[in-house]
Length: 218
Image (cartoon, rainbow, N blue to C red; front, side, top):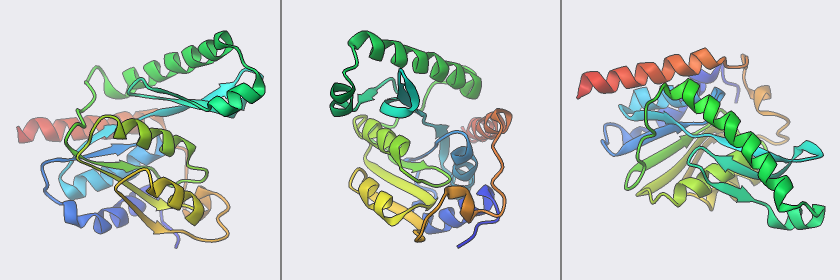
């Protein structure tokens, strides 16, 4: 399967999620930045609320690309204790990395939300959306964090991802919806005709539009 762009992928996902249409308890959460474009199409088609959910990788002090854990936009820190022990990292080193990611996350949340509070997911049907998964590490952290906030139902919806990763993520949610699990997988962008980097201002515009629709409906 090849998607034209993220909007096309979102529209196709929305068709698979049609059973949620007009359910007032649905909240669609997009993972910035590209996932928000997909999520916006889903939320619009379902008549659902739209928000963002961030999960930042916490890198090792000597190698930022080596993930020792993740920080989520709900403030939760998830650490790989086995890897931390193996690397013999001190609590001070870990705290410095966590604080660095926390400041960046606060900056991005302020930029994207413009002072709007996060939507309360307790007792709601949550649809977590990204533009695709590869390793699935940030999605995994997001699902685990969201589960602790007691949603009524937790659904993962992505256009594409490797079957092994999807199977691992499926046990962390109530339902996983994926449009394609091609093998070999390569990279998410391989399955889009257009996969440009999503700018911050596009994310802001999509969230502003969703907030405006909510105000008009209330």
